[in-house]
Length: 307
Image (cartoon, rainbow, N blue to C red; front, side):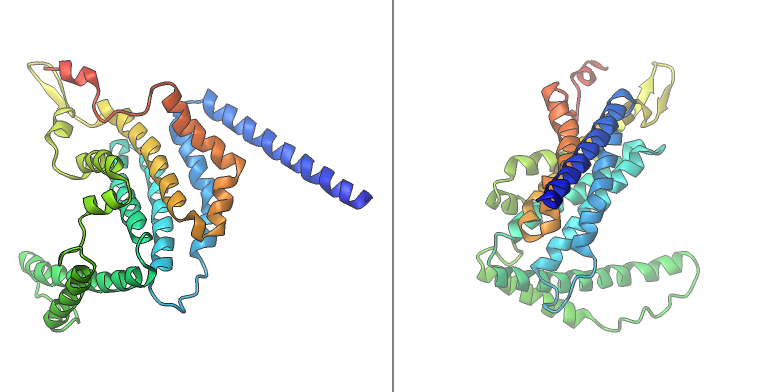
């Protein structure tokens, strides 16, 4: 049994060393500046090999189906969180929140999709993917000739030919599928998807939060204007820390919720979510902020006292 005992000792020492390294890293992050950003970077780095394990070398024998969609959502979520950390570490910190929109929509859609019958879900994603590809062709066919004309250049043949009948047929087939499932010809709205997945409160919060960063929003424009009665400066800088905290905390929240939604499908995600380091960084970002009553606010009371 000596070999077994020695192996157990080596494993215990290795685990103790890993815990010591993690503790030192956490202490360093807590002592430094921009704690939330640095902790979010650790989540991105820690998750990368597990996301690769889910997304690389995937067989496509069953075609484009719910399994593939689930994997793409995992990759998109990791890409978005990585983009958030990159934006927060740039002069354009205020733009970091834009990535929350894709993460929120993917979470709501994925939770709804995996709750469907597998065959219905697969048929839906294939038909909707076809419609969306053809809609993209239409959008560029409508715009690009005008763009070339404005630039005084003859528009080239984009190579798609006449696709209008294919688009009409694809839309009709998708509408028939949706109607057969009781969703109406246009399919379920995002809000309906969230209600079926018991995500209504998350929908209302994250849609409002992300919409403020991607739509023309007068509150966002007003908070960029600072100065005196005589002159003002227009800049995102006064609220860049607010934007960064919103992106870091709620980007991490959405990333974890997306992994949670599909983890039972992919063992590497279960491994990631079960490891000590992931739990520690997640707790630092989310539980740490919550325990201090400092989950980031979209709007602060002080703003209401500003003329």
